[in-house]
Image (cartoon, rainbow, N blue to C red; front, side, top):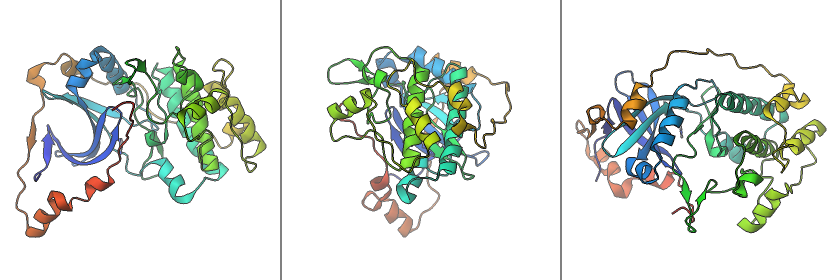
Length: 336
Ligand code: ADE
Protein backbone atom coordinates (compact mmCIF):
# COMPACT_ATOMS: atom_id res chain seq x y z
CA UNK A 1 0.00 0.00 0.00
CA UNK A 2 1.32 3.40 -0.91
CA UNK A 3 0.64 6.14 1.58
CA UNK A 4 2.27 9.52 1.84
CA UNK A 5 2.96 11.81 -1.04
CA UNK A 6 6.15 11.78 -3.05
CA UNK A 7 8.31 14.89 -2.81
CA UNK A 8 10.83 15.82 -5.48
CA UNK A 9 12.79 18.88 -4.42
CA UNK A 10 10.21 21.55 -3.67
CA UNK A 11 7.43 19.76 -5.54
CA UNK A 12 4.83 17.45 -4.06
CA UNK A 13 3.73 14.94 -6.69
CA UNK A 14 0.07 14.11 -7.25
CA UNK A 15 -1.95 12.11 -9.73
CA UNK A 16 -0.82 10.98 -13.16
CA UNK A 17 -2.09 13.34 -15.86
CA UNK A 18 -0.94 11.37 -18.85
CA UNK A 19 1.35 8.71 -20.11
CA UNK A 20 3.13 9.54 -23.34
CA UNK A 21 5.64 7.81 -25.53
CA UNK A 22 8.49 8.94 -23.30
CA UNK A 23 7.28 8.74 -19.74
CA UNK A 24 4.65 9.86 -17.32
CA UNK A 25 3.33 13.34 -16.67
CA UNK A 26 2.24 13.99 -13.11
CA UNK A 27 0.43 16.81 -11.41
CA UNK A 28 2.57 18.48 -8.74
CA UNK A 29 2.49 21.48 -6.45
CA UNK A 30 5.34 23.79 -5.52
CA UNK A 31 5.20 23.61 -1.71
CA UNK A 32 6.76 27.07 -1.34
CA UNK A 33 4.33 28.94 -3.60
CA UNK A 34 1.45 26.41 -3.76
CA UNK A 35 1.53 26.88 -7.55
CA UNK A 36 0.44 23.84 -9.55
CA UNK A 37 2.77 22.42 -12.22
CA UNK A 38 2.93 19.36 -14.45
CA UNK A 39 6.07 17.24 -14.21
CA UNK A 40 7.25 14.99 -17.02
CA UNK A 41 9.38 12.15 -15.72
CA UNK A 42 12.03 10.53 -17.91
CA UNK A 43 14.07 7.49 -17.06
CA UNK A 44 17.78 8.37 -17.15
CA UNK A 45 18.73 4.87 -18.24
CA UNK A 46 16.44 5.10 -21.25
CA UNK A 47 17.98 8.41 -22.24
CA UNK A 48 21.50 6.99 -21.87
CA UNK A 49 20.60 3.73 -23.59
CA UNK A 50 19.43 5.62 -26.65
CA UNK A 51 22.45 7.96 -26.59
CA UNK A 52 20.02 10.85 -26.47
CA UNK A 53 21.78 13.02 -23.86
CA UNK A 54 23.05 15.74 -26.20
CA UNK A 55 19.86 15.75 -28.20
CA UNK A 56 17.62 16.11 -25.16
CA UNK A 57 19.87 18.72 -23.62
CA UNK A 58 19.64 20.79 -26.79
CA UNK A 59 15.86 20.42 -27.03
CA UNK A 60 15.31 21.30 -23.36
CA UNK A 61 17.60 24.33 -23.61
CA UNK A 62 15.67 25.57 -26.64
CA UNK A 63 12.32 24.91 -24.99
CA UNK A 64 13.37 26.87 -21.90
CA UNK A 65 13.87 29.89 -24.12
CA UNK A 66 10.40 29.57 -25.62
CA UNK A 67 7.74 31.68 -23.97
CA UNK A 68 4.50 32.00 -25.83
CA UNK A 69 0.88 32.23 -24.64
CA UNK A 70 -0.08 29.21 -26.77
CA UNK A 71 2.84 26.93 -25.81
CA UNK A 72 3.01 25.01 -22.52
CA UNK A 73 5.97 26.62 -20.77
CA UNK A 74 8.98 24.66 -19.56
CA UNK A 75 10.00 26.11 -16.17
CA UNK A 76 12.98 24.03 -15.08
CA UNK A 77 14.64 20.63 -15.15
CA UNK A 78 15.88 18.55 -12.24
CA UNK A 79 17.58 15.20 -11.96
CA UNK A 80 17.92 12.49 -9.35
CA UNK A 81 20.17 9.47 -9.62
CA UNK A 82 17.75 7.66 -11.90
CA UNK A 83 15.27 10.21 -13.24
CA UNK A 84 15.02 13.47 -15.14
CA UNK A 85 12.14 15.73 -14.11
CA UNK A 86 10.88 18.38 -16.54
CA UNK A 87 8.74 20.95 -14.74
CA UNK A 88 6.01 22.40 -16.99
CA UNK A 89 3.18 24.90 -16.84
CA UNK A 90 0.03 23.15 -15.59
CA UNK A 91 -2.93 23.63 -17.92
CA UNK A 92 -6.22 23.00 -16.17
CA UNK A 93 -8.97 22.98 -18.81
CA UNK A 94 -8.41 19.51 -20.28
CA UNK A 95 -7.81 18.48 -23.87
CA UNK A 96 -9.44 20.39 -26.71
CA UNK A 97 -10.56 17.12 -28.25
CA UNK A 98 -12.53 16.09 -25.17
CA UNK A 99 -14.78 19.01 -26.13
CA UNK A 100 -15.40 17.42 -29.51
CA UNK A 101 -15.87 13.95 -28.05
CA UNK A 102 -18.42 15.35 -25.58
CA UNK A 103 -20.16 18.02 -27.65
CA UNK A 104 -19.42 17.19 -31.29
CA UNK A 105 -17.88 19.33 -34.01
CA UNK A 106 -17.26 23.03 -33.53
CA UNK A 107 -18.82 25.97 -35.34
CA UNK A 108 -16.55 27.55 -37.95
CA UNK A 109 -15.86 30.63 -35.81
CA UNK A 110 -14.75 28.59 -32.79
CA UNK A 111 -12.64 26.22 -34.90
CA UNK A 112 -10.97 29.22 -36.50
CA UNK A 113 -10.08 30.74 -33.11
CA UNK A 114 -8.39 27.53 -31.97
CA UNK A 115 -6.68 27.05 -35.32
CA UNK A 116 -5.32 30.62 -35.21
CA UNK A 117 -3.83 29.92 -31.76
CA UNK A 118 -2.39 26.61 -32.95
CA UNK A 119 -0.75 28.31 -35.93
CA UNK A 120 0.59 31.10 -33.68
CA UNK A 121 2.27 28.48 -31.47
CA UNK A 122 3.66 26.47 -34.37
CA UNK A 123 4.89 29.59 -36.20
CA UNK A 124 6.69 30.87 -33.10
CA UNK A 125 8.40 27.55 -32.37
CA UNK A 126 9.41 27.05 -36.02
CA UNK A 127 10.95 30.55 -36.03
CA UNK A 128 13.20 29.29 -33.23
CA UNK A 129 14.08 26.09 -35.00
CA UNK A 130 11.81 23.86 -32.90
CA UNK A 131 9.50 21.42 -34.67
CA UNK A 132 6.83 19.43 -32.93
CA UNK A 133 6.75 16.37 -35.20
CA UNK A 134 3.91 14.81 -33.25
CA UNK A 135 1.05 17.30 -33.23
CA UNK A 136 -2.10 15.47 -32.23
CA UNK A 137 -5.18 15.99 -30.06
CA UNK A 138 -3.55 14.88 -26.81
CA UNK A 139 -1.09 17.74 -27.21
CA UNK A 140 -3.74 20.46 -27.46
CA UNK A 141 -4.73 21.60 -23.98
CA UNK A 142 -7.07 24.38 -22.87
CA UNK A 143 -6.59 26.62 -19.87
CA UNK A 144 -9.45 27.82 -17.66
CA UNK A 145 -10.05 30.79 -20.01
CA UNK A 146 -10.29 28.55 -23.07
CA UNK A 147 -6.83 29.54 -24.36
CA UNK A 148 -5.17 26.80 -26.42
CA UNK A 149 -1.75 25.60 -25.22
CA UNK A 150 0.33 23.17 -27.26
CA UNK A 151 2.27 20.71 -25.13
CA UNK A 152 5.33 18.58 -25.93
CA UNK A 153 6.85 21.02 -28.42
CA UNK A 154 10.36 19.81 -29.16
CA UNK A 155 9.92 16.85 -26.83
CA UNK A 156 8.41 14.33 -29.22
CA UNK A 157 11.68 12.82 -30.35
CA UNK A 158 13.09 12.28 -26.85
CA UNK A 159 13.08 8.55 -26.88
CA UNK A 160 13.27 7.18 -30.38
CA UNK A 161 10.69 4.62 -31.32
CA UNK A 162 12.39 1.32 -31.97
CA UNK A 163 10.11 -1.13 -33.68
CA UNK A 164 10.30 -4.86 -34.10
CA UNK A 165 12.49 -4.56 -37.17
CA UNK A 166 15.14 -2.74 -35.09
CA UNK A 167 14.96 0.34 -37.28
CA UNK A 168 14.40 3.83 -36.06
CA UNK A 169 11.01 5.21 -36.87
CA UNK A 170 9.70 8.62 -36.06
CA UNK A 171 6.01 7.92 -36.08
CA UNK A 172 4.44 5.65 -33.53
CA UNK A 173 1.07 5.32 -31.94
CA UNK A 174 -1.77 6.22 -34.27
CA UNK A 175 -0.46 7.80 -37.46
CA UNK A 176 -3.76 9.55 -38.28
CA UNK A 177 -2.13 12.97 -37.91
CA UNK A 178 1.20 12.13 -39.50
CA UNK A 179 2.25 13.57 -42.88
CA UNK A 180 2.75 11.17 -45.82
CA UNK A 181 6.46 11.98 -46.15
CA UNK A 182 6.99 11.09 -42.46
CA UNK A 183 5.27 7.74 -42.95
CA UNK A 184 7.55 7.07 -45.91
CA UNK A 185 10.43 7.31 -43.45
CA UNK A 186 12.64 9.32 -45.75
CA UNK A 187 14.10 12.61 -44.62
CA UNK A 188 11.47 15.26 -44.15
CA UNK A 189 11.03 18.94 -43.49
CA UNK A 190 9.74 19.38 -39.91
CA UNK A 191 7.89 22.59 -40.78
CA UNK A 192 5.87 21.09 -43.64
CA UNK A 193 5.14 17.95 -41.60
CA UNK A 194 3.76 20.08 -38.72
CA UNK A 195 1.58 22.02 -41.19
CA UNK A 196 0.03 18.73 -42.40
CA UNK A 197 -0.82 17.74 -38.80
CA UNK A 198 -2.41 21.19 -38.26
CA UNK A 199 -4.55 20.52 -41.35
CA UNK A 200 -5.76 17.20 -39.94
CA UNK A 201 -6.51 18.91 -36.62
CA UNK A 202 -8.52 21.64 -38.39
CA UNK A 203 -10.49 19.00 -40.28
CA UNK A 204 -11.32 17.19 -37.02
CA UNK A 205 -12.40 20.44 -35.31
CA UNK A 206 -14.82 21.23 -38.15
CA UNK A 207 -16.02 17.71 -39.02
CA UNK A 208 -15.99 15.98 -35.63
CA UNK A 209 -14.19 12.98 -37.13
CA UNK A 210 -10.86 12.13 -38.79
CA UNK A 211 -10.14 12.72 -42.49
CA UNK A 212 -8.06 9.52 -42.64
CA UNK A 213 -9.38 6.63 -40.61
CA UNK A 214 -9.11 3.04 -41.76
CA UNK A 215 -9.49 -0.29 -40.03
CA UNK A 216 -5.94 -1.36 -40.83
CA UNK A 217 -2.57 0.37 -41.04
CA UNK A 218 -1.89 -0.56 -44.69
CA UNK A 219 -5.08 1.05 -45.98
CA UNK A 220 -4.57 4.05 -43.67
CA UNK A 221 -1.07 4.61 -45.10
CA UNK A 222 -2.46 4.39 -48.62
CA UNK A 223 -5.20 6.95 -47.92
CA UNK A 224 -2.74 9.35 -46.24
CA UNK A 225 -0.11 9.00 -49.00
CA UNK A 226 -2.69 9.98 -51.62
CA UNK A 227 -4.39 12.54 -49.38
CA UNK A 228 -7.53 10.60 -50.20
CA UNK A 229 -10.22 12.15 -48.02
CA UNK A 230 -13.78 13.34 -48.35
CA UNK A 231 -14.77 16.89 -47.38
CA UNK A 232 -18.19 17.18 -45.71
CA UNK A 233 -20.69 19.30 -47.64
CA UNK A 234 -21.30 21.60 -44.67
CA UNK A 235 -17.72 23.01 -44.90
CA UNK A 236 -17.81 26.51 -46.41
CA UNK A 237 -16.09 26.91 -49.77
CA UNK A 238 -13.21 28.96 -48.30
CA UNK A 239 -12.69 26.24 -45.65
CA UNK A 240 -12.64 23.53 -48.32
CA UNK A 241 -10.09 25.49 -50.33
CA UNK A 242 -7.78 25.95 -47.35
CA UNK A 243 -7.95 22.35 -46.14
CA UNK A 244 -7.24 20.98 -49.63
CA UNK A 245 -4.15 23.19 -49.89
CA UNK A 246 -2.89 22.15 -46.44
CA UNK A 247 -3.56 18.43 -46.90
CA UNK A 248 -1.41 18.35 -50.04
CA UNK A 249 0.60 15.08 -50.07
CA UNK A 250 3.52 16.92 -51.66
CA UNK A 251 5.37 18.81 -48.88
CA UNK A 252 6.97 21.11 -51.45
CA UNK A 253 3.68 22.49 -52.78
CA UNK A 254 1.80 22.29 -49.44
CA UNK A 255 0.85 25.68 -47.97
CA UNK A 256 3.45 27.17 -45.63
CA UNK A 257 2.62 28.90 -42.34
CA UNK A 258 2.98 32.43 -43.82
CA UNK A 259 0.65 31.39 -46.66
CA UNK A 260 -1.91 30.04 -44.16
CA UNK A 261 -1.76 33.30 -42.18
CA UNK A 262 -2.34 35.23 -45.42
CA UNK A 263 -5.35 33.13 -46.46
CA UNK A 264 -8.84 34.69 -46.45
CA UNK A 265 -10.23 32.02 -44.13
CA UNK A 266 -7.51 32.45 -41.50
CA UNK A 267 -7.54 36.25 -41.49
CA UNK A 268 -11.14 36.61 -40.26
CA UNK A 269 -10.99 38.15 -36.75
CA UNK A 270 -7.26 37.36 -36.43
CA UNK A 271 -5.32 39.18 -33.76
CA UNK A 272 -1.58 38.47 -33.85
CA UNK A 273 -0.41 37.34 -30.40
CA UNK A 274 0.74 39.97 -27.95
CA UNK A 275 3.45 38.84 -25.52
CA UNK A 276 6.80 39.78 -24.08
CA UNK A 277 9.97 38.76 -25.85
CA UNK A 278 13.50 38.19 -24.69
CA UNK A 279 13.35 37.80 -20.91
CA UNK A 280 16.54 36.52 -19.28
CA UNK A 281 16.41 32.76 -18.81
CA UNK A 282 19.06 30.73 -17.00
CA UNK A 283 20.20 27.43 -18.44
CA UNK A 284 22.20 26.48 -15.31
CA UNK A 285 19.66 23.81 -14.33
CA UNK A 286 19.91 22.22 -17.79
CA UNK A 287 23.71 22.17 -17.58
CA UNK A 288 23.61 20.63 -14.10
CA UNK A 289 21.17 17.91 -15.13
CA UNK A 290 23.04 16.92 -18.27
CA UNK A 291 26.53 17.17 -16.85
CA UNK A 292 25.12 14.76 -14.29
CA UNK A 293 26.68 16.55 -11.36
CA UNK A 294 25.67 14.55 -8.32
CA UNK A 295 25.76 17.50 -5.96
CA UNK A 296 22.86 18.93 -7.93
CA UNK A 297 20.69 15.85 -7.59
CA UNK A 298 17.28 16.67 -6.24
CA UNK A 299 16.05 14.76 -3.22
CA UNK A 300 13.20 12.33 -3.72
CA UNK A 301 11.40 11.25 -0.62
CA UNK A 302 8.15 9.84 0.46
CA UNK A 303 6.43 12.14 2.91
CA UNK A 304 4.96 10.62 6.00
CA UNK A 305 1.30 11.47 6.02
CA UNK A 306 0.13 13.40 9.08
CA UNK A 307 -2.62 11.24 10.44
CA UNK A 308 -5.28 9.45 8.54
CA UNK A 309 -8.68 8.32 9.54
CA UNK A 310 -9.97 4.88 8.69
CA UNK A 311 -11.83 6.08 5.62
CA UNK A 312 -8.78 7.80 4.15
CA UNK A 313 -6.70 4.68 4.79
CA UNK A 314 -9.23 2.39 3.11
CA UNK A 315 -9.76 4.65 0.13
CA UNK A 316 -6.03 4.86 -0.43
CA UNK A 317 -5.56 1.14 -0.31
CA UNK A 318 -5.02 -0.53 -3.65
CA UNK A 319 -8.32 -2.31 -3.83
CA UNK A 320 -10.13 0.98 -3.61
CA UNK A 321 -7.87 3.04 -5.79
CA UNK A 322 -10.22 3.79 -8.66
CA UNK A 323 -7.81 6.45 -9.92
CA UNK A 324 -5.73 3.86 -11.76
CA UNK A 325 -8.74 2.79 -13.75
CA UNK A 326 -8.97 6.18 -15.35
CA UNK A 327 -5.34 6.79 -16.11
CA UNK A 328 -4.84 7.18 -19.82
CA UNK A 329 -2.52 4.73 -21.45
CA UNK A 330 -1.04 4.82 -24.87
CA UNK A 331 -0.48 1.31 -25.96
CA UNK A 332 1.51 0.64 -29.05
CA UNK A 333 2.24 -2.99 -29.69
CA UNK A 334 5.10 -2.08 -31.99
CA UNK A 335 6.82 0.02 -29.33
CA UNK A 336 6.34 -2.27 -26.38
N1 ADE B 1 -1.03 16.63 -19.44
C1 ADE B 1 0.12 16.62 -20.09
N2 ADE B 1 0.77 17.77 -19.92
C2 ADE B 1 -0.01 18.54 -19.14
C3 ADE B 1 0.09 19.87 -18.62
N3 ADE B 1 1.17 20.61 -18.87
N4 ADE B 1 -0.91 20.34 -17.87
C4 ADE B 1 -2.00 19.57 -17.64
N5 ADE B 1 -2.16 18.33 -18.09
C5 ADE B 1 -1.17 17.83 -18.84
